[in-house]
Length: 295
Image 1 (tube, one colour):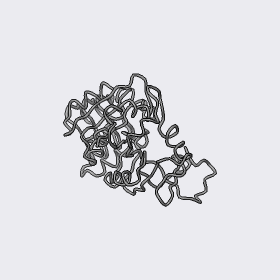
Image 2 (cartoon, helix red, strand yellow; image 1 turned 90 degrees about the vertical axis):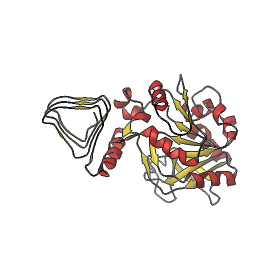
Image 3 (cartoon, one colour; image 1 turned 60 degrees about the vertical axis):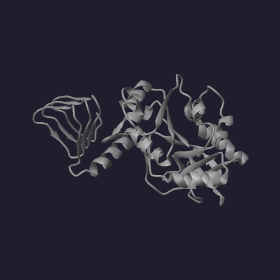
């Protein structure tokens, strides 16, 4: 069993911060999003983890080389972004031969991967998706399953007409795939797995199944959501603060409550920060007073 983490996105929803930090390396207090994703897929006991990259991929590769995760980690580079399905196809040589786990890098989730893998094996599915209750069917893709756990509806969103008269589920971004998936994806082109693979599979009644989960799930894909997940993490610390080594903080500066300051940051004098994230190598000028901001 191997695993793949999808990390090649452009991070446009997290601009301007992702101009210099790839989204997978955005820090949530003492761990990056990529580290959190790796820790999640390690629960499946993979022998190898494949991570695809595109935007600022060299930074991701250097990060992986500087850490030991206890398993082999392969970092692929996409010269042109290939999308979710195209990225998986590009990693075929490492993944083919047995079932494998796939996870998005911009989520934090608690999913029973053993249960998901067992359900996938028992159903003989091409793909088995970890699902959860959809908190906003007009925003997130809407899925429905039958009594056998086969996915029978896969819509981009429910649209404004959705009235809640049927159970609304959503894809968590974690799945188990069979090697058979590769025959459905063309080589070397951008290809989205939800719209180009999964939606047609439901229409044809092919092997797409889902398992309902109820564990923690957080989308960290936007600045607002990212800020919230960092604040929640800081709230679990006794002092509500996280300040890394190798930072410079000027005189008469007040930090907190709920402030994270990362390596290489420079904070000037007479600064007052509350509910803020200071990203690696960021600069906060003298006299700045801010609340709820990402620098």
